[in-house]
Amino acid sequence: MKTIMSLLSIFMMAALLAVSSLVYANEPPVTDTTESIAKAKNKPAIRGGIVFRAYCVLCHGERADGKARASKLYGTVDLNVNNGRDYIEKNIRYGGKAVGRSDVMPSWQEELSEEQINDVVEYVSIVKDQIARGEVVYKTNCILCHGVKADGKGRASVLFDPPPANLTLSDKNDEYKKMIITLGGKQWDDPK
Picture 1: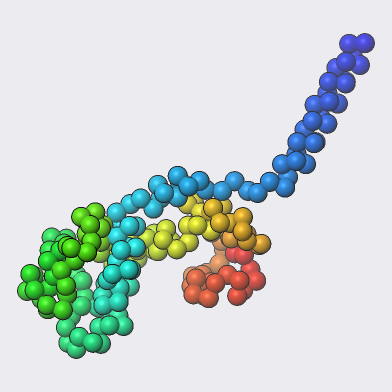
Picture 2 (picture 1 turned 60 degrees about the vertical axis):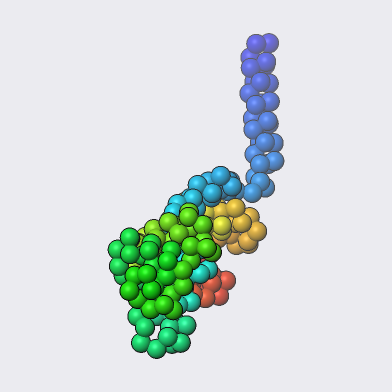
């Protein structure tokens, strides 16, 4: 009788495991949380990148090198941002005239908050570093789908079929990755 009870218990546990695996098999993959995304994006350089793109990129360019659409409007004015942090902060806060540059650069202290000014200074200080700038670009554009850990489990990943690629497992070369970033993954029918 004891053996029959033991076998019955084992059978019941196996049945319970089988049913629970069927129930959870169709569950969406675990994704990033709102908190994990907020934490990843809550860095001055990330926030500064967002502000820079909204206010500065038109004149100063994506890399703060002065190569931008509006730079043609200013003739020979050098719009390259390449000086130290104090200089950059003063230029943003008070305008170009305050640092001996063109008065075309307006003062932003009435438009931007203290935090935004400090964040832009932080971003501009790292913008020429490809890896640091890449982190900013990723965390402002890609994190929602590809996730904080680049594992393809971002909050929006459940909306896609096929799901976003796990970038940590990608074996693609840099040229291919540039094409995917430029044209989008759907163009290639390849999730990696």
